[in-house]
Length: 180
Length: 143
Image (cartoon, rainbow over the protein chains, first blue to last red):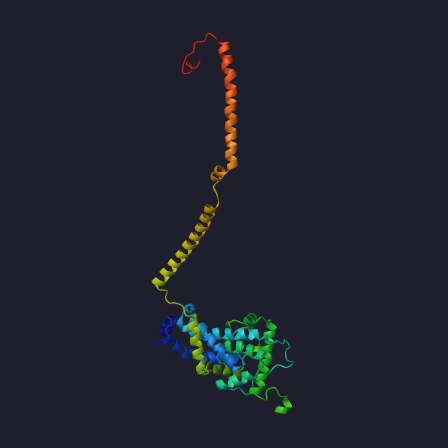
């Protein structure tokens, strides 16, 4: 069954088609939710809610080719809604020293590595890094989504990058005499 | 989403490990727990509405609404009609009142007395004033 047919049958409430739809998209949606939410159970609930919203609002999807991005946006919005309820604390402090360009670039990275690195970040840093670097939102859009200032978004991103750079390339943030 | 012309400072310039993270995150998929599908189907069952709405269902809903309106109108009618049945009509009230009846008799009697008193001396005076006037008409005999 091709995607437009699958979507049509899901719109008609066909349970078999809904099961196929779920098998196809739920793992990706759960992967996205895991990147944002700290607890696995929370991510699982967010995935269920995202899939439910997707299946019940398929009538609003105009072009079936855009379904991947459409579902991903639903999942991200669902996660942000949960995070907003957590009342994250944001810090506007900029680090004294910015991370230098990566001396030892890693061209290959496994998806599980990404997840484990993100899980180590504080929730605020993690959210901004996810939205800016992995989803492609601008700072202005992030500010509107999370109701924070532009500077807060920027500083959170810098902090997140600094920490990640330290973990990915341990030599990067060390003083020069330690590296040599 | 990120627009192509959105300015990024050198500080925000993406690093190679970020690119690697970005492409790896696209492949990130986690197999959901078995119970999740069950939870989702429960939510969908709860949400399910008749789709598409059948003409019979639509017609029955219209009939139900019409019946409800008629019922409300009938209830109002019954209440208003019941009030008019219990409230006495003014004329019946007056006729049944013995006091009114007695006063009516008094008035009738007094009018009759008045007529008699006016008729007596008036007739005598008239005949005395016009003695040669021939009696004519319906009252000729009585004169």
